[in-house]
Length: 277
Image (cartoon, rainbow, N blue to C red):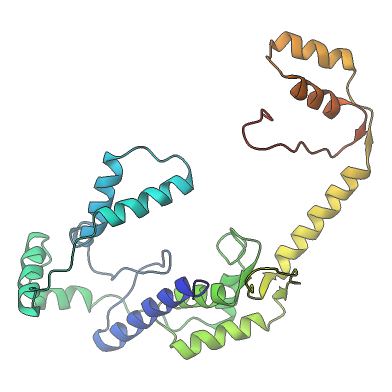
């Protein structure tokens, strides 16, 4: 279930977009994290109805500054819990409709007739994405499946196909496109390592990404086998003394080893905070 969580949400968004387009003739903006905005509303109008986002951002601004991505994620989670209100069981469709109507008026969205004229009369959306264009987007080195990760599984492909479809494909068509992509010659299935814990789903990478990895490994192997004469030890000692660096014995030994004769490729291994830099 965890592996398919994002894919399931993106499929829901895609199906919602498809049905609203078919029923109301609305148009959708660019894809962002699996979601799209209705064309016809200004950012300020959309912001007026993003109450949870505004509440979370207010809590984040008042709290401690998050530096790393992990800290930001944890801060977002905490803010989401703090700002989550209990469900008001007294709300009825009539009360909600009245409240939303007042909020729409304050946001200058206008009456229903005006909304229909604005939202349902945008430029006609493009037709369904062609398989060739879809596959090209999936293997794009800057925005595709391997743009930030070296490998992906079936759920990742389904999620990206649903996001790219923009409501132009049914759920069955999304699933079929993902299957066709994984059977294509654009990807390669990766060998799995023996697992002692939970079963891990099959993983793939793009052929182009594997080619880049192979080329990188070949270059590293050449550097490993290429011998260098190194730096004169007196030069190293003078550099350390001139910079007035307060180095420990292990740090000095590491510098001397890196500058000594040997392979062109050398790696310093130590836990975080042990003075590698």
